[in-house]
Length: 379
Image (cartoon, rainbow, N blue to C red; front, side):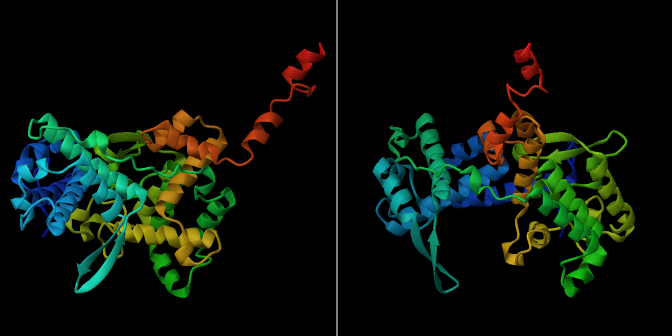
């Protein structure tokens, strides 16, 4: 059953409902965890985005489950029974063993099957961050006598290499857009769907490669997100940020074409989907999975590879960033457009640019008589 809301904020209903659903998940997690963490739960509500709050709570639930399973730190039989006194006995060494030994490789019973789980260093670093935040808060809140987090072992994250960045080349972008325009490269069954969705698919791909949108930023777009008379549209980004983005002529054209000629009319839609921009053939807002599959299909055609080797929407985000830098836009402008927290992330895309050093020195020739530098030297 659709959730009814009384929305008095500036945010659209789908964004409010999405966040409300995540908050409901958080509250369900909190109800399972020890009551001495209540102040910490309140702290999280005001300190981090709802998605981060959910991730932290899941990590802490995982850690508490480990405490019970190991039986080394508590005699509790359920998560809620773990006491503050139990936590006071935990040392930095205990946490280091949990992160460095248990989390690397462990088994869980899932539907009577024994399933192996492994975490890479990025996942371990997030778990460490979640646990550190909890222990630091309990110390600052005078619930624990000592702050043990300073003795947690560091987790080394591999430095991203520019050459490892996956993105489409310029000619591959052209191939992708040709495929969605003509249907070339699609199977007969895919063409049956393409005939009904090609304008939608084209609008999705053009928005991805123009703005470098995150998957959920695109998925949550509404018709009301766009103000064509003012030439702008609203994006709802991570951490609750609302960003007005100018819309260029190409993006405006593909979005308008989809709305006018292919998208089902509002009278044929359930109330909760009347404003949703990108709809499935079932007349519902597209799922994240369906958008991923769509992108994977067209990028695989562009790269002339199998469907399973196609790229994710995040690779189109990398394509947008690299293409903008190669076109000549500054790193800081691209950082702003892409919503990167740190400019070093954007610099990776700049470093990926092929033959960058060659381009620099060839366009900075002191002895070329046709350049101002050469003329000045000759004089």
